[in-house]
Amino acid sequence: MTRILGLVALIAVVAASANALFVVPADVNQGDAQRIMYVHVPSAWLAYLSFGVTALAGIGYLWRRDLRFDAIAVAGAEIGVMFTAFAIWGGMMWGRPVWGVFWQWEDPRLTTTALLLALYLGYLLFRRLTDDPHRRAARAAVVGLIAAVDIPIVHFSVEWWRGLHQTPTIGSPDKVLNPSAPGLFVIALVSMVAAFTLAWAWLMMRRYQLARIEWQIEEHGRLGRITAARRAAMAALPPADGAKEGA
Amino acid sequence: MQDLAFVIAGWGVIIGGLAAYAVLLLKRLSLARRVSIGIRQQAESAPPPDRPA
Image (cartoon, rainbow over all chains, first blue to last red; front, side):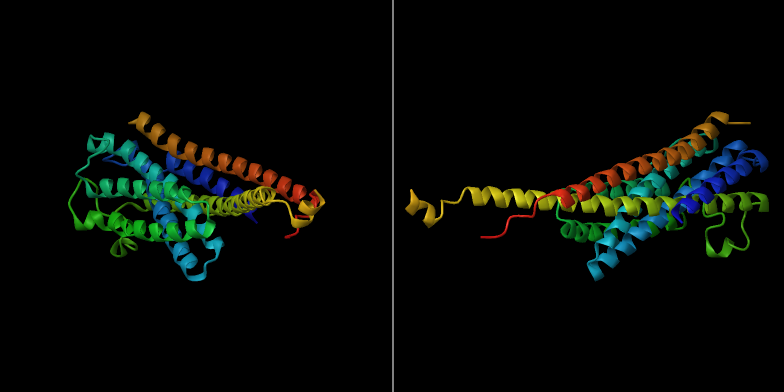
């Protein structure tokens, strides 16, 4: 199942990328730089999705105390960090030829996205503070929920405040059926979003599997340390009464 | 193509990064599976644990 999904995702990414790079015409105003949007937008969408999954899995853990939810949460956070970095990178590569700058700290979308990246990098580092899987899962769930507050702020920042970043082209409810971009561009973008989402699903499944195995290895290590400590404590005990009498 | 360097840099890092992460993830998974199998085999062949006094 996972292998088939991986293969389908690979074919979808290759086909959608070929269409976006070589078939769809260049934008009249932005030229070929606009093609960067075909990887920038899916990356941003998958960053939201990943962190949303992390937050929901955190709620799931706090509710059920089941470590499988924590495995989903860490998968979402790690993959979300990667897609956030991709979204920032793609935005910078598009911003330089179109806006004239790679980055502008005054722009609310850019700044809140950088904050989102920092928050979830912090989440991943925070997880390393304790070895106890349940304590770690509970603390991480709370941190993941707090960090998730930034997701709607990033998304709506272009509507709440003025900045360099444009308002949504197809992402707002009033533009879903009437996008302010030609149909060919929208089809190319939606194909890339679909292909990247398939790749995301495959990555999430694999990362979840890894988290489960890592947890088992970690648990074995913990049990080994406890057994070694117990043996050392027993060896340090004074000899039993029978042994004294015999001496 | 205009702004070719930016298009290549944008696409290259994102698609290349995605591919690199996927390969790295498979390697990490394969290593973890090997360690996990080793632990299981070790546990099966180990003597029974000490009984509490």
